[in-house]
Amino acid sequence: MTLVDSDVLIDLQRNHPAAVTWAKMSRQTPFSISGIVAMKLLIGSRNKGELEASLGFIRGFDIAFVNESDHAKALELAANHVLSAGLGLADYLIAAQCLNTGATLLTFNLKHFASIPGLIIETPYSR
Image (cartoon, rainbow, N blue to C red; front, side):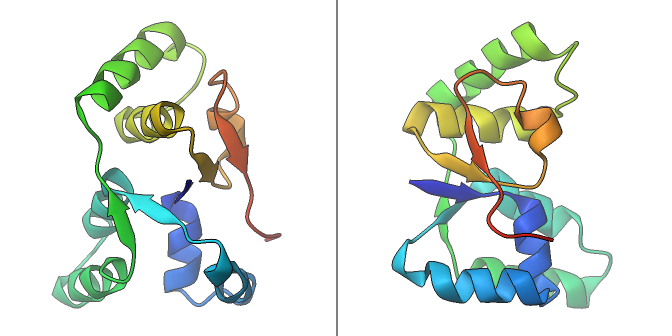
């Protein structure tokens, strides 16, 4: 399983050429987005038009929702890494979801996520 972080999806929303090329090539390897990432995209909307565009955009993806064990893992991660990782609540939930499912996280936020032991992170394309 592969989960895609919000920074990659924002590039796709903005039609960043490298992101679009990557998305076309990755159709053979399906990926999902976390429900947390979907919410981050919606929360980033500045007006009704952007909100509607984001809603339409995320409908094109398989959304994997966090569960109780993801919340418990996120709490454990925060307790162990909050002083060193620089992650926020949403990122702890995303990391926990990846760890619990064995998913690879595609992100450009390597600096912060790299502090989580066992988390598999990759950049999907060059920026």
